[in-house]
Length: 110
Length: 139
Image (cartoon, rainbow over all chains, first blue to last red; front, side, top):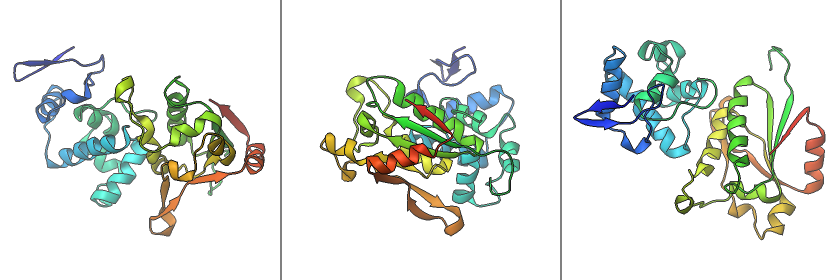
């Protein structure tokens, strides 16, 4: 189902992931979150921006174990744990945050 | 692993094909990334045309493929620390270790010191490494 934002239509796959990586803009993340009944705060954006730069560097979305470890290293131990990340993204940090970040679904364990 | 949970086998993924002419290289990489979640003892081998998968400066725009060579740098994050490249395969193609990406991992037990994970080994030594494996997957 295409996603409508600012009068423009964006193609997504059957699970709601953005079809074209280059289409992404912050408003899309907000629209996706709103559709899930969530609101994105600063802490969410930290993770989303981290995922986008990880993808830019490595061309993959990290598995959740890798994400957790890397977040801990970059943003501090209090954020590098499953509890914190699941509170922000209850549908699964890798899965849900990647969707908002406009990345493909992560390979492997999400 | 160290705490004796489950059975740890030695898995070896052998990559022998050039990166973009077929889907083998990318599929192998995806399998490796998925399998990394199972805490097994993983080695990667690059031989024959497979050595091209690790070359620096790949540019794929003109063939419309994603440049997944950047993903090899993430292997360290997935605790994959044993990447063997066959020396003779490099030489036969006029390549040397300098033509390859530097692959590193951060050693959690050594204050996150960066250490090399890519090793250029001779054919004889590689045969010994392959001989020690429990499971071999060839791509």
